[in-house]
Image (cartoon, rainbow, N blue to C red; front, top):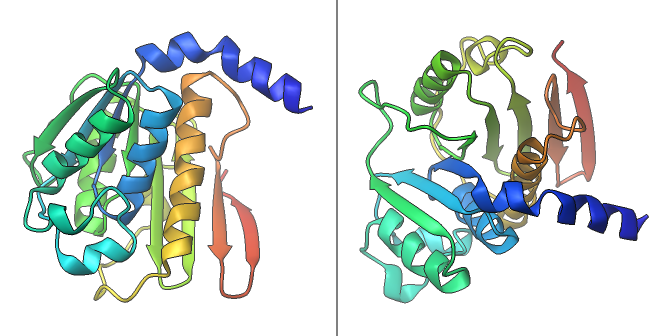
Length: 218
């Protein structure tokens, strides 16, 4: 079984090398997603974030350290990613995702944002361009992941209709790593054209009680 999985990954390495992936958000989720995509060999990564590295970020944002404090997240992340994989073309966009945001030509977009207002902007621009969106959200010990294929699955605005931003609470770092790893896995499967994704489903994770549940959306 392991040999078969290895063969399948090797078959699509050329697609991975040529892929263009946009990661929205360079916080907890984004750092792990970025690290994994660079390590697996994604050729082109577009990184969008308008924040700077702050001390509380260091408990779960794995691309940063004490030397990163005060630096724009996109530049600190790009510097670290270039050391992880010098062959990866990382484009850093120091910008907050708001109503003026426009999307470059990419194969997949990854939602690693921490607020619904920006998430819904990302959802809209992806829907307009029919670009797959891998969404995730985390809070305390719980998180969710889903893959949105516009025209085949509900959009993010339909799945979370009426959702509002709440005050940011402490997030369990192992949860962030787990959820982001699932996001990265979804991205690779989309690039490789695999059908076994979370499209039409939401994976719900509760690490406090070790519960994993998949809910169908279509």
